Amino acid sequence: GMVIIATKISYWLPLVIKNAADKVTDSNIYFVGTQQCIEFLKSNFGSSIQYRVIGDFNKIESYNWLLLNETFWNLFNEEFLLIFQPDCLLIRKLNIEFYNFDYIGAVCGNVTDNTTFTINGGLSLRRRLAMIDVCKGLNEKENSGNINEDIIFTQKMRTQPDRYNMPSMHACNQFAIESFGNIDTCVGIHGTDKYYIDRNILSK
Image (cartoon, rainbow, N blue to C red):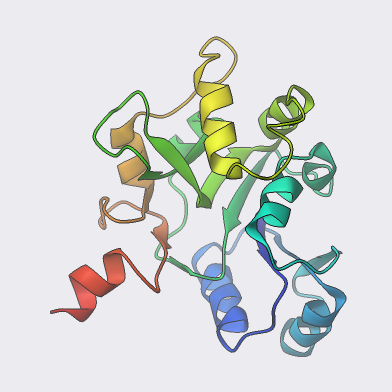
């Protein structure tokens, strides 16, 4: 399954979803957002995508809190979910090798250290039951939303290598681009309004 979360109507939102549907044709697409956004998208897509309603929020803390709760992951049934945000551009369908990992996304954070870099969640493939498993073990501070959800998932899962299969920096660079990565293999680019697109494409 593919999941996009948004709480604001924008011109780009339907285009991002159409791009995703064009590149990954054999997957359910779920839109998670406010009722207002859902009505807007229904006028574009009808019942060709599936909808899940959440309350209105404007703060990153609310987004973090949402993904750090097992209730969110229980909205879906698929074994794997491709999370993508409104600032993502998908290039190609997923290579089967990426399903070997419980969580994979672009490299961010400490990008020079293979043991401490963060796996960016903005465009990421996640094993749903692994996400639920992590959420069940979070303490109040971790579950508060004050720390980015992808930092929490990366740190919690990396410290339990016998429980979760986590990718190397090289594998993440093959999967997606944030500031850098392999354009010839990646499923897509996250942060199309900044980073890679600005520096490597628009400047040429």
